[in-house]
Length: 413
Image: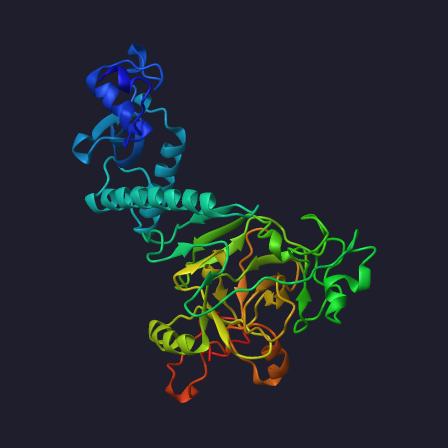
């Protein structure tokens, strides 16, 4: 029987670090796991949760990775080789002491301060795991960073990061039937390339910056086109190209998004991705979101209000972008795998291009309001303001605007 099992393998349910911890506990050397007799007593610090100073010697209460909190131990500074964790703990400690207006060099931390620092360390680990999961899930070049230095909130609940639209019940996608035959879509477009076929202008310059005014549709090359993935008429479909950061705002507006790189004027930033639902379903969900004081509904159709994108529970980084009555992102209608402007079957995206150059660490903002002065262009653009608004506005809960700009309209609608 044993001979028949020779060469068989069974997947291990324990993680690499758990196996290392087990070897150390049992005093077993394992070359594959990197455990030797020389490093039996080397343990990994998961986080630091308290501090004290005795006769000028600093001690830290250590939570060991792979061990329960009951095994926490006080260790002198000389025993710790976790420079990054030490630096972060000191920063958190000093920030909390300043906030409470306490001594900057205490001999011992107040219990409430130590409890806060332990919670902060646990939160940071949760956010680091979420950041890692986001970057494993993303299918675009730009990396995603996560930061919260405001409170103890961890990753948002009931939200799933997706790269492409999630199609709701009763909605069917169809593929485009034709594509261009250009060898060089930018310099030698045949019949005007995809845009010319639909009697529209080529949308981008040689840097991929949009050169059409808001309200005009953009027609990118599609899966049927002869050109390759590096075609200059494939901008939105290449995905997010910049490193962006999801961070907690300090003005009560929840999470926000800022750039980690400088972005040129009129460049593509991100696409508003979510669940595609019918307008009837959007109306139903809209009332719920109104009571919650937030909206994630986004009209998708160019001519008729038939479909809406809902990014409340399924979306990408655009889910975390805040509203402003003076936004720096403009939404366009981009047709990729459907050339029809009457989208009874969806093959269109809602990308956001920046109005102006955006500096490093600058925040992104959409406009969620409907401006009656510019009703025609607003209707032509995909927009939040009209999404799920088929019912009477008098029956809707008015959502207060918190953008704080001088031109603030005070309410989202």
